[in-house]
Every structure is written in C-alpha cells, then in structure tokens.
Length: 377
Image 1: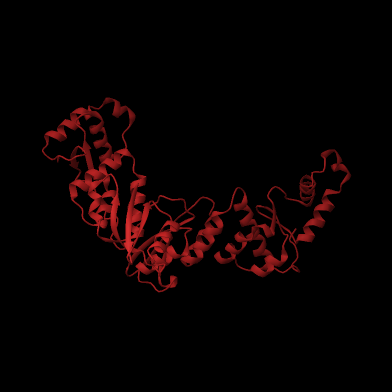
Image 2: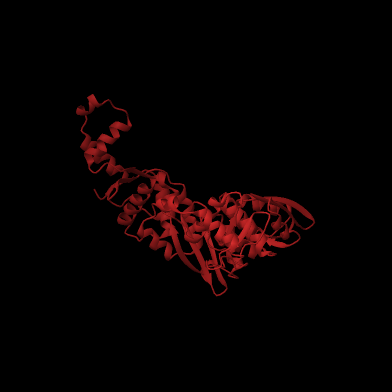
C-alpha cells in the first residue's frame, strides 16, 4: 500500500492507492481541478515503507499512473515486494516510468538472505524458471546455489539483502511513461486496447466514461471513432456472437454494454440472450451491441422460463408460481393455460427457453418491438 499528499492550485489532498475513480474525483474536487480529464498533480509527500520511492516527491505525475504503481504494489507477494525494494535500490530510479518498469520486471532481481540460504537459492531458481517440479525441489542443494551466487562477485549489498540481477532475463519496457499499459488486476467484462498513431491505451471495462475520455486524451484523440479498438479478453458468459459485436463497436458502446452485463446474476445471462433471440426473430432486425445493452438494461420487461419448452410446461410453471398445491394440478388444463399466457405475452420458445414480453411499452420504446407481432410458438 502507498499513499500520496498531492497539491495543485494552492490546495492539498491525500490519495491512497490502489484507488478507484471516486477517490480520484474526490482529489480533483479538493484541489479545485475544474477539468475532469486533468489528473496531473504535484506529489508533495510519499507515504511508504520503501524509501527509494521518496524520489517522487516534488515531481508532477498523473494520478492514473500513481494509481498504477499502487495497484502493482498491492498485487505483489512478500517475495516480490522485497524484489521491488531491491530493484529500486539497485537501479536508483528517479522517474515514475522507471519505477513502474522495475515493478513489472521484479523477477530480474534475486535477493540473497545470508540467514536463509536454502530459501534464497530456491527463490533464485524460481525467478529464472517460474516453476520447479516438487521432486526436484526436494532433491536440489539450494544452499550451494546461493553460495555460488555469493562467491560469483555479481551480488551487490543492500538494506534488503544481497542483490543479484538476472541479466539474461528479458526486461520488458512495460510502461512508456505516457500511456496506460495492460495490467490485469480487476474483474472485467471486456479488456481492450485503444490504438492510434500516438500509442496504445489499455482499458478494463466497465469503467466510468471519464476514464475512457482520459485515455483518449492521452492518445490525442478527439473522439472514440478516431481510435482502433482491439478486444483482448472477455469474461465468462460473453459468447462468440457478442464478441463479434464488440469488435465492430466503439469503446463507449462496449463500455455501456459491459456496465449492463456486469450487473447480471445467475441465469440472467441466458435470460439476456434468449430475449435478444426473441426480439431478433419477432422484429426481424439485427441485434447490435447497443440493442443488446437496451435489452440488458431492461431485462425485467421480458419473462423468461428457461426450463419451459411447451405450452403445457408454461402452464405448470404458472401453477408453481401461484403456489397451487400439486394435488390440484389435475383440475387445470395446463396446456390451454400456457397457450393463453403465451398469446398474451406474444411469447416465443427460443434455444434457451421461453421468452415473453410483460412490458410492451418499455420494449416498444427501446427496441421497436410491436405488440401486433405474432408469437412464434
């Protein structure tokens, strides 16, 4: 965890990272920053147990990038955290860009604790290889490996232990100092890269639109239509057809759908796709991502019975909903009951179950569904 005292316009505010958009908005309010896309501030104080990070004091920095550092630090385990400390001590970083890149490449800095040589030797091997079979761990002399490193003359003394830099490991310039790089540390519906001639910006959706607007600003883009959207990943439940819709949509439309999709619970994903299938067939229209977002935002306007595949099953489902005792079911014509209900709702059987419209005004207003359209039963 890391926090900052930030200043601008003669005012001061604290930002604890990782932060969310509400935290950044609060700092902007405290610092009387009128432009919601302006997140560049002066770092007055850095509160951290890593003294090497104090170098950021009196520097101007983007709060989004300060938060990226905080997100990285929060995601490190104890071993990786010590590697970050060692890497910053070794490289003598003075810029936020270089500090974040050390965090992204922490595995390059192996730390040798002379009081625990076996663990140090094992961690060094893990830094190089990423994983080691259990039987090999049990049979390897890691104390000898640690001593070999100490005797190699390549180690540098530090407050965190002896530092050995694994020069042969690839050093990735993860962060260019200007644009948000890809870092997966949050739940998301869609992870996208925005691209133009000025660079790439990574966004994990859903977010508040102003976060996208800041990404566009850093790219020097005047609109969402002036950048290419590369869909990197989607969450479980987003099917192939929806992914194709995303690939042909602008980032704000993807974000709008992601906000709606993120709120779905349980079988509501099937409910959404079934409702979309119903609308597409009944209205004879193509469903794009905006239409799908309309449906997702108004899912309550569509009745959904996933296990009902006939008029009779619709009737039995209605008896269950009305808590009619099962010993009375024989006195009801469930098939006729189901047929009447389907006709009332202009319902259809889809590949995912029954879908009907229970709020025609809402559905007609949003997606042009006409009550005069016949049901497909």
